[in-house]
Length: 525
Image 1 (tube, rainbow, N blue to C red):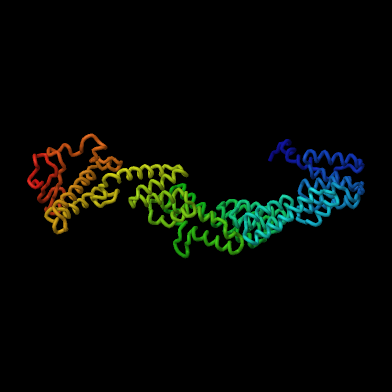
Image 2 (cartoon, rainbow, N blue to C red; image 1 turned 30 degrees about the vertical axis):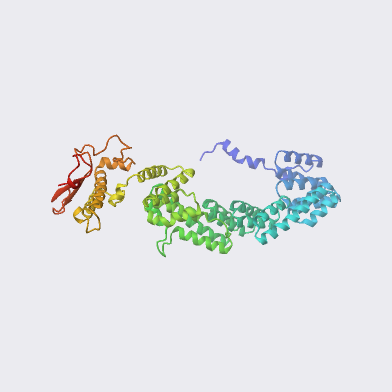
């Protein structure tokens, strides 16, 4: 293998530039060491600055200012324990040194060591700092009292005031995290848990809670897995973290399968992974719901936290059945989706489709108007147009309703319905059906009118668009004005081996009057 010398040089560059204590000449004056340390601090190389400070202190261990400067450098990189040790040394060498007193007081206050911090501030004569310290201490007490009473808002507010001063206080952070979770502020609560891990790196519980809350409550599975991976980095042997990670990974694998099926529009296959299909195949919905309950009992999830992952899966299940046009099976899931989110797109589409089937056109339009305020969807637009058309048509005549058929009835079903009603409203059978001949005549007139429109593909298409061919206000002329009688003709067919049309005898009666006075009695045979 041939390697360019330039590549090797670049690879060794970090090693060549890294400073070690042995690189500092032993005869370098202390003043120069302090200057070099200051230069390194100014350029952001705190670790190198610390090496120069270490060398200076080794050669002059009685110089309190060097300890103070090194303590300040430790603070820059968050190493507060080492910083406090240096400030302790400064005050040992130079009692009453204000800078060291103030910095040590801040470190103590950050840990909520109120009494010790107050003592340092008093020694430094910092009355303003003492007032702020007292406010923070009082706020911490009130935060805990509010938490005990379940007053989450007051708890969060007071804990926040205390944390401004005592940002490294484990108990205060933990209290605010709890109150945030109890209030449902999951993202903010997880943020506090991350601070707890910085304060106590060996603590496992915040890892478990951060992961479970992100995975189940927020439904952000990738973040949940990331949090639990951090737990295993901190403690590779943690059985609790290994168990939760295994569970989350298995669920995430199935969730990704569902998403891929959705992308391919294989909704039937996707739904099989989502719904309960028996003891051996409970489905993602049931599994996630049970996990949420179990982890709440174990303390990983707070009871008032949202069930975000379950909500997402419910929405997806509703969507699957809407896309499959299976309103009946989708009803429980779409109803639940709307309970979680009143603006659920597929929940509203499902609701609107149900209202259409029930001929509740005005309610349907209102549902879709609400949906369009929150979503943009081609399916929504199509359904909205259809609902308006049906609403418009419902205010005139509904020929489907006259024949007692659904709007998706085919030609055979239309003919069957017409035959059935023709027998019921036959004049000879009017009395048998407790109807007067006049009533039968009116009923049959409506039946014939409906059949003439729905049996003609062109007229049916017009009617389905909301244009009633028999509405004089919607058209010029009448579709039946070509009749030489100038009125409607009502056809009765009977007998004849069930053939239709034709077969057997037929007769018709006519309403209105092409002839002066019409036929005697209004009937023509």
